Length: 264
Image 1 (tube, helix red, strand yellow):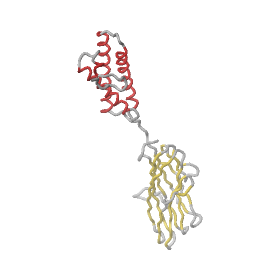
Image 2 (image 1 turned 135 degrees about the horizontal axis):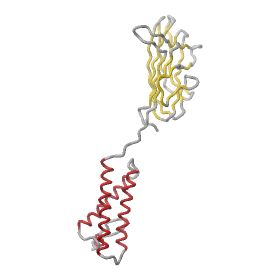
Image 3 (image 1 turned 45 degrees about the vertical axis):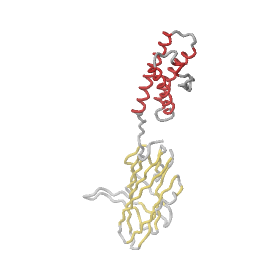
Image 4 (image 1 turned 90 degrees about the horizontal axis):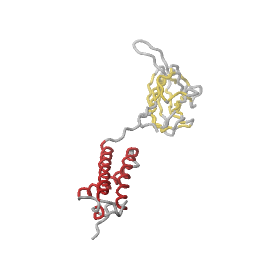
């Protein structure tokens, strides 16, 4: 009864391999080669592809030697044993390469995060009630790939990714009545759906601190703005100078980072 082929690639049976391999141990080593080649085929296409290519090339070299053995009808025993030993040496090299792929994944490319930190040292007010007004910045504290544009209400990114916008605003009222302050985001000049917040400020010299953060999936060249509106012009974004023991108070502070996800 004929034995099943050891290799799908060469269509060789164990009986055929026994014609030039001296013992069962060598036959098992060749079977290991084909099993290892199958592992290489699984690995190729993953993050290990560039290392697997080297191992696959080694496997192909061993397969070529075995194919030559199968095709030589009058090969001498000495020649067959020599080629078999060469192929076995390649098997050991190939096995070590596969084990290395499994135990030590290749290092990923380091991609530096993009970030920016901005604030404004002036008091900002609307000129018309119930009208969208852009918040501006006059100071860049830190910047790498995130920067102010023109006008300075626009915060641009130079690389696509998921960005976290975190802002804090110092509100102040100069009127005694209860008034409304609305805050929201715009992306590339278009209001962002469901991004608004509402704050009611009541009483003259009533200061309110507002904090907000929002995630954006941005492309290179996109820009984001913070917009606000008020029901009374007496509601403003207050800036104040340093008075011991505290430092100055910006009307707005904005930090932007994309360390949530690697740069695309």
